[in-house]
Image (cartoon, rainbow over all chains, first blue to last red; front, side, top):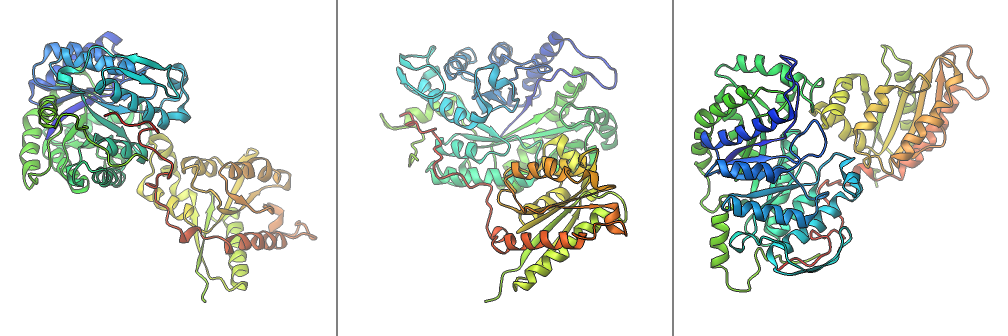
Length: 372
Length: 211
């Protein structure tokens, strides 16, 4: 099982000091945090993509390329890459390039984006969000799996004999997750292709996440990629820890109360009871996180949101120390217990290369059983 | 054959105790139940005072998801066979709480809902708010709004009331219209699966998947 963090990349005033970092300070902090992920023994760093302040990460592969050079082991990912408003040709090229730079330590999570104005800024219409996600991904896959692509769709200029460059490393496309909070069509898309499904999880009650993941698993099996328990599931999570639970609550409360997304709304106590947010001791984080398995089944990837809401870099690094030293080793051990041997790990570049080599020539990868 | 019990959800945004908005809601619910009973149709009335979930409504506005308490109210209201929606008129329109409740529910969840709208205010000069502010909101939501909307000014509860078309007359007329719509409704009997995907949906967007 993989553990890591996902960064939204918000540039937020620290409510306890009134200080707002500069863009460069925040960007450099994200790069430092990513390297810390490797240092403390986690597996994945994922960055968001945004095109409006106060968010800084508009160019994920630039950041991930730098992190690739500074790390040796962690998987570089996204949460999420905007499949609706980015040109799939550029996504194909950017992430193939990153594969080569990072020796294959790359996957990505596709999302639609819910910031209304971003769509018209990139020449699109938010009401076409789902058709954009479907068509753009259909093209993205072809650009990675076929050498020369002829293409004519609804949303981008046609292609004739186009070859995206560089070609995917070792002829194997990066593994793709599809992220969604509440859209069954996206879970259906992930299931159809046999791709991963990433449930954001952090702004929505557990019961809803359970239904979405259950639906994805059922459809994954329907499309013939394996049993429902073999579907590839990732979850978000959100934690703040101190040795003593009360210290965690006291320190995190001003950040929670003023957070850009949920601040000035429900109390910290209400929000922690209604969402996976856990503020407390490492043991409380362990107990809560292990509980996720009860409603989504054995899963492959757990990412935590840690650097947000104006938390200082020093604090985030301390959180990562706690996560790496006290929480994740226990989670690895406990999640491994009673995990059926038939439940696969999340695909990596190495496993995808091995699978491609083992497949008979001409066999389709993740062959769908029907085309609606 | 015994008629299926119909559920009537009553949403009232009155704030005071006792509230004339709640009084009007209760009269409409009683009258609608009576009119259904005349048709041999049993009815179950569930009354929701939005004041009880006021903070939950605002938190939903801010976080994007309902608390379990509000979720239960939303489920009950949107799954009913008929809706009686009553608000005080504040500053020429529905109260902010009333509007906010209907802002946070899924905008498809009241499609085809048999609905009666009603309002209270200090004087009858505000009565048109029902038709210029509240009816359009439900029309946007594709609810089926009875043509009679019931407005009760303070004087309607006493001696200064309209003596020709009295408040009980207006309530009874609206109740009759709503009862007819509810009798024809199958809403609470239908299973609504949020994971139902339209039959025309193609996970590839209609494109042939790559080989």
